[in-house]
Length: 110
Ligand SMILES: [Zn+2]
Ligand SMILES: [Zn+2]
Image 1 (cartoon, rainbow, N blue to C red):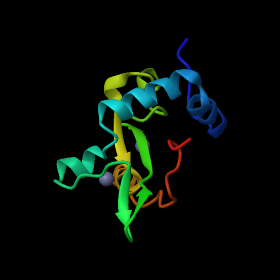
Image 2 (cartoon, rainbow, N blue to C red):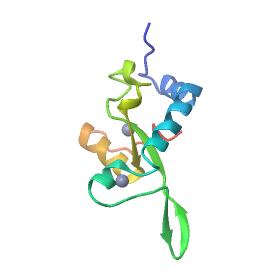
Image 3 (cartoon, protein in one colour):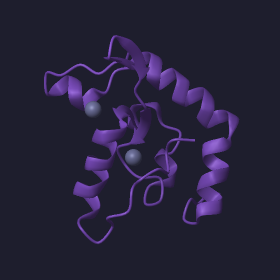
């Protein structure tokens, strides 16, 4: 049986699982800790930026290109993962879900 990730509780459990943590790390490494969207647009975001001469960490999320809610089978598929910075991540979700879901997306940043 394929697990479901429809409720917050199911998602929370998933994002805390060892399998996800391991895969997430691997995805970050594969993407060199860079936001893939920024990279495509010619801006490179690594996991830290310089602010006032100090390194400040940028929050990176590992995003599911196909959402686990609709595609639970793809939850642990490496190719379905993409490293995004928090900005791009929110943008991506807003674009996908339209205006009805204006709330800030923080599902994937456990
Ligand atoms: Zn970005
Ligand atoms: Zn996402």
